[in-house]
Length: 104
Length: 238
Length: 112
Image (cartoon, rainbow over the protein chains, first blue to last red):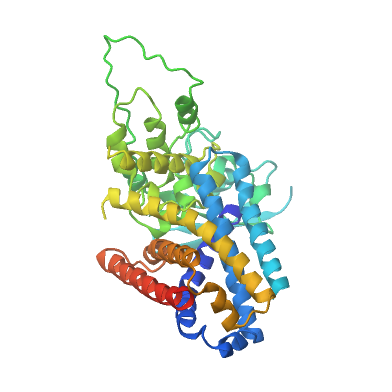
């Protein structure tokens, strides 16, 4: 009953949203404290931190992709291909994730 | 087509349990055939619903291996895993007994969503002239074939998570009436379907549309209701 | 909450989503650029401090976040934790205020 792309898209959208909502206060707090210190930038070079950043970027891209899917479903006239939007959103998330990984 | 099916059937009420039966496999057997065999040949105390048995009335809707379906239109070959089946009453509804779900809440929500036509013409007026290819009529027509079988209601996780949620069928019906130019109750209806218990609770899982045996799209209808409500609120009509 | 309130939340969520889509895109490009250029803290701050445009942009970003995140969590709290009603909405208002405060603190630190 839940084995279809639109449902997975929903789960990814919701879980990534929760992850971002949990992460953002930390992100704001850290930025407010630490940008004046080069040691902060050095800290961000650590592998675990880089992995965390990469996960955040993937979550962001996944959430954005899922959100675009919802906006399309809610505002555009209904078409069956809208189901494949879930796939499009996933592809987008992956692409951004890869690009960011390359940049890191 | 030799061999037997191992069938797990829900017995009792909410605090019941699955009971196992062995049912001989037949060619072109449907899940309704299986349930019927159990009741006639193995256990006459089994309670279940059916009527037309040809895919028109929706009475035989049940959970088959965790998925809501019309059992008369579900071939055993398509759904049996390793010769076994699990049959349970429709999800998200109270159980009366065995495979029989209590449909009252489903239809109560239909009424709460104002799923009832209210015209303003009388028998003295001429027929309403509605162009079948007008955009609103096309949108309404896409949803009017609903027979109230509650498969979408059983498939919807928001119904499971939010007890007040009106559900896909009720909202789909409301939409067909909002798009019916002969109906005079649009604002009343938008008021009824907006909010936490209404269209705004839908998260576009699209399970309803996936499972609807009539291939309707409550997802599209609910999206339409969201747009209409937003327009009405922005214009100060609601 | 009244249905009018719910409808407004729905609109606010979609509107803030649109704003965030743009802000996130710009932000990601900017961050990747900064990382690839290997800029130090001092170099970054040299470019960002005193910039009205960046200050305005990131303030808008923070505002959109304070709208979008709490409304998004609202459904999760009611559907997955069974938390409904005034106390939930009040808690989310607090979250919005917290995000706004820490967000503007960061923006002021980087762009003021």
